[in-house]
Amino acid sequence: MVNKAYRSILALSAMTVSLSSVALEAIPDDELNHYTGQAFITVDASSYSDATLGNYEFTRVNLGLDIETLSNADELRIGEFDRSYGADGTAPIVDDNRNIVFNADGSVAVHDADIIIQNFALGRVDNYNDPENAEIVPFKIKDPYIELAYKTDPGNSSIRRIAGVRIGFGQAQGDLSGDLISLTGNLEGEIRGPGSIAYDAACGTGGTATWFQCIELSLAANTEIYAEVKLLDGATGEATLDGAPYLKRASWIGVPTGTNFESDDSGLIASLIPTLTNSEDCAVIGVTACFRTTNYQSVYVGDPTQDFENGSASGAFISLQLESVPWEDLSGIAGATRVYTEKGAFLNIARYADSSGQQKYPLYLDLYNALTGEPRVATCIGRTKGC
Picture 1 (tube, rainbow, N blue to C red):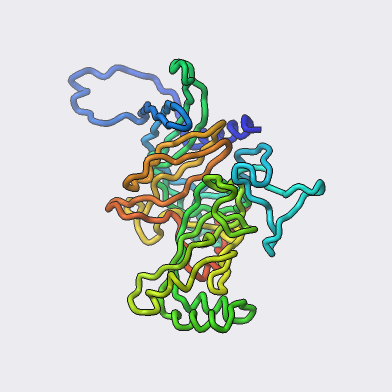
Picture 2 (cartoon, one colour):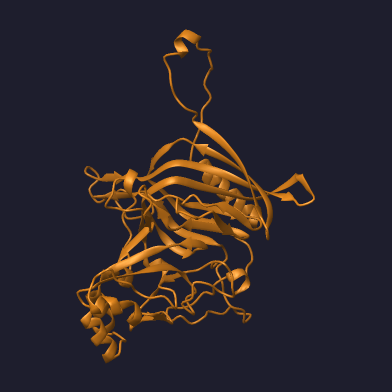
């Protein structure tokens, strides 16, 4: 039930901050002059009108916190209610050969919740097998918030109902780990690396590229190539399904059908990369372009080469809606105004603008790991998971 999922997300918000009561005493005016500061908690109220969806009011509780955490959970499950294949963009479960899996009654199988992440963890532990020298590298969060969305009655603005709730982060950086079983929303990243890695994967032992495709890849061996990756329907390689704005309960990620690799290098071969590398049916010139989300046991949110102020991602949030909600887009990207969500859970880890206004991806994979998978970093002392 959606109400059950609401309790889950509110329980998650309770983990964010714990407040204790203390005795309050008045400070004399002459002593108060020596103090400066700002509110620990602020509340923002806003409204938004959409020609199609209607009128909304929002209340955001901003928590002025800097958080560093190493946390583990057996499972994160949000948005558990009935969905059927194709309805509202619900993706099918497919096997390793990308064949659709069917239930015993002949219906197409789908996951039973919008977001399912088993062995969920934030942060990591370096030297985890050496308790005396183990080092905790926390997941960092700045300025978290909790926001409620209300839908107002079109005939009487004083009548309103709760439409959704989200938990978001002003900035976030660090390792996110888990078995990514089912994902709903925006998960955007970039894969990048030399063409030689693609050549080895497509033309080496077990490769499926044609001899002509292998010639193309060999010519681009020293050229750096990159592509955007998104959640995909594993059966088709498409990033959408039946016209829905985003996929629900996806379990595959990769280069969407119809897109291609790019290159910033100069020269004839680099200039031909976009033309030669169009993605079709989960393959790009013989290179596999769709992968199970469970292949990526750990992903780094933000830029691992930068400090927190310069390398953290903004605009990330997780939400739950009883109906469609146009949340404010806090990515900082010029012209971005709203993130449109529909009934159910929604995970938003999408492109954002850094301090200089340059667009960045919250997730980066090198081409080798994109093709082979990303192993889990240790999130416990003495073991990789299951603290």
